[in-house]
Length: 247
Length: 192
Image 1 (cartoon, rainbow over the protein chains, first blue to last red):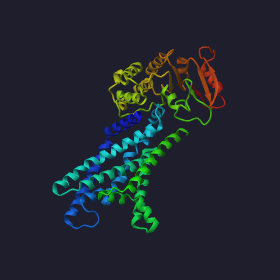
Image 2: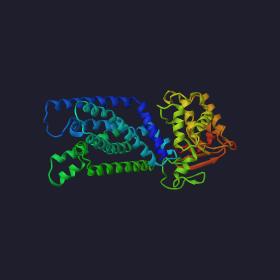
Image 3: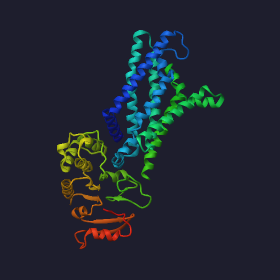
Image 4: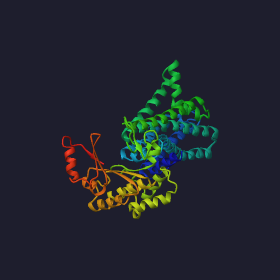
């Protein structure tokens, strides 16, 4: 476990000295700032709006504006994890160090989760702004952040797996984008199909997921789904790393 | 394969008496490895990189190990510099310092002098010769003059088969002639 921590520390250190980190963070905050402003404006003008109950719950997954940037930012954050090392050749010293493959993957995964948290941390200020001008349901906000954290655990694991599979960072980013985009689209089937297909789509729906959390409902079905996907993808990443040793 | 980077399809690998397939991590802990081209994290400073690697290798006294290996690889003066800004020769030496961190009994150096200027090559050879009697150094290279200058024992591998195992000092003919003869039909060969 100590070696996983060493891997994680280096990954974060390298990320936060790279220009990529600041480009991503800036772009992310500009995007979300605009989204938050538009949503607040919308609710201010239309007192009785359908769907989400408040600008904050709309911000946390109540609109597609929440998901579109994620489909882009997650691949950019995770593409370097393994594929970057492979491209730079540094994977060789890493994999010949006396460290289990599992520790390498867990370190990388931990780093990606930390990046995810750094991404979301500044958005707390939006909740604070709202609390200055009205009432904020802190329970629902906490549930939203919890939902975002679990969603991140699942997104980052998929990005990590794609980065383990792909030979280069660009391919890793494209694969993650396709995988997340596909999961997102299948989830929308919730509003399209009936019967069993509808239930299936609803189960993996990111939309339903965040809508439930943003209202303060912690639905264990989503929790179980996210965490099982995360565990599966992280486990598969270890398998991919092991398989690479066999050519 | 010796370093555990690739798994063998058949056969066994023993490092210092340890089965490197079954106890890969234990075997890797006894090796210092400098891969061809010396891949390093370019954004890190030399001492940061060495500290990171020492921690990864589970070295007990990280600061001491870093100082010692910087010293023996002759890069103490570059310890605060960013790796990406170093010359090839310096990077090569940082790679060597890295392989020395855990004070391993065995060093594997893959093409350690490629891309170095003649002075750097000479320094590097002296450094490696300095390990004689203390460590086993496995040098993989295509530069035969280097082999003659540094090695006590030479193994030539052709298409995965060992075709020669000799001591260059004892042989009358030059290594180059032996090599040419052994690889006459095929031009692929590797001298270790």
